[in-house]
Length: 447
Image (cartoon, rainbow, N blue to C red; front, side, top):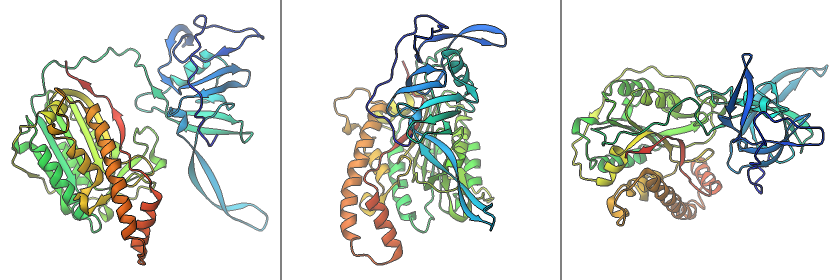
């Protein structure tokens, strides 16, 4: 259960017909691509599986016995609560304990007995139970018999939504976006990394200034001590964005994730920290941005993604933003921001990784690499550059640059004696890669 099964592929053996049943000598295999007759409110309907675990299996009397797990699928990242006993009284009764969450993964031989408290002994039961997930709460609770430990556990899992039922495909508009609106948030007043956030801010501003369709008044920056939860909310709410325009939000600051806040969140509890000024959940920021109803919403952050509990909120007053002069001639940025629709949410590092800032980079490793990929000279043979190409190159460049800087920094930090520098050295030594992670990608190129 605690180790992902990596050597098998997804089983997709077709069912003979919808709503098929099996005799005692037959085995009904799971086919997540099939249609199955399910009774809903006393009406029998032929439905497809909208939310999937991306596993292969066989239905038995005990439930769905797993035969294969797709590498990187939803069942590779599952959470459950564990209670650690801290103190007992003289009679052996627990009087003090703490609760924390651990991560697990399905493997071949495990048996899913229930999904959302519904026994799953047939395809009909399985489809009906998993389809209980919604866009607002895209999670499921699965009860699993662990073949390795010979015990049952309840796990929280985020199924993959691979088919949207009842919604027609969205055709992007044929024309380009009419304008671009940008808000950059940079915690430059931070005592530890203010220098890095300032350096990255300059790089991002210089790059975005070259974007066609971006007017001087529409590049706004919130920085220094003005970076507070309330100010960020107010700045986003104050953005005037039309439905045929693109919206870009770039965040430079501290970050972490809180697994206890992961339910219903594609970033699995990622949050932004502002020290004693409070914090903001990434999910809340993204919802505010998407709520502006721009045709393209891009959210990018250069922040860490390591485990830490989210603290209390701050309530500081809104002070306003600064605007900068522009010169928009970069056709590549025009492709990215004017010729796409949808939503993109991207962070500089994946879960359990720090996002590193080095002096030679002039700020964040990721921001330095991404800005470098926003220049047309990087793609001399391309007539059109989309987000997929830029993000692929940015991922590669981020990790390459991190490897170079990490090697040199470990040499420089080899003989340090102060606690703070030792902590930095140990964290750097323990992290072998820095890999940007896309939390949400619903982008479409305009036709």
